[in-house]
Length: 336
Image (cartoon, rainbow, N blue to C red; front, side):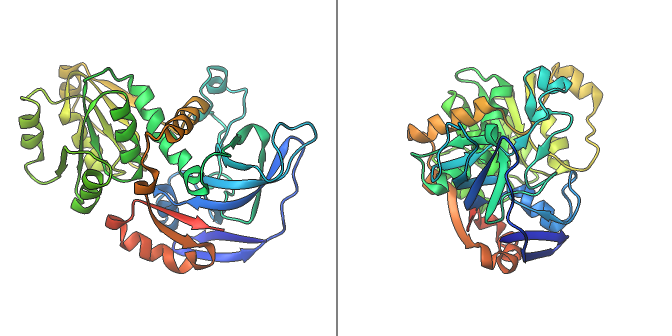
């Protein structure tokens, strides 16, 4: 059986490994599509804070059922996506209904081997029917759920001013669901190409390239009030520190990015705003359900999100190329 393994930073290889055997309560899924995201690029580059090597990457997953337990509601051949956040079900977070931040969470492709392999065994509860989606759409559900979860955490109201910092896949996902909730969305990024894609293909008219005058530009757009809610999806510690300055008094700051650094704010600025600081980690089943409904309803332009396709056999060679061309890559999907 083929698997794409990252044995150490910058060392991606196609390896043979034994086919998995399903444990009781597990489903075997034949992988067909695997989305690449910032986490995978960070794993490749050696700066993902929750990972040890070697690791089979892949957590944005679409496939077909290969085997099911007796009595399962799933069927062989069924198209599915997978919730990659495998929670313990008993810890303090799980007891509060927050398995996305389980104290013993095992994320496929990060803490345990993921879906960049021909067949994967996963708990039946993690498998989500996606019969009426294309394989490409099914492979995009997870990253869109990250954005849906961040927006749910923010509890936006109709007409609120929202700033999304970062026009990569996660930032775009946040912007899409914030717009669906009726917010007025502004997107900023250092990469003009990403912003142009958000404007021309995704319909976001208010996009601004970050430069030395960004604070003045944002102040001018809001009459000096700044934004009711700011989402950071940059993956950059300097941008995360700067983001507090764009939050309106009484506003919220939602951190979707995860970086291996200390995040430090000026306490007087934080208190002057009486700002609410919110972390957003992973996603819940309700977020996956919202994404599925939005795709089915035609509210998510999935064709515009999917920009690149890669065959699994070519990924060890193509991965550095995709990273080098990051300004032009929104969502690359690997075909198995």
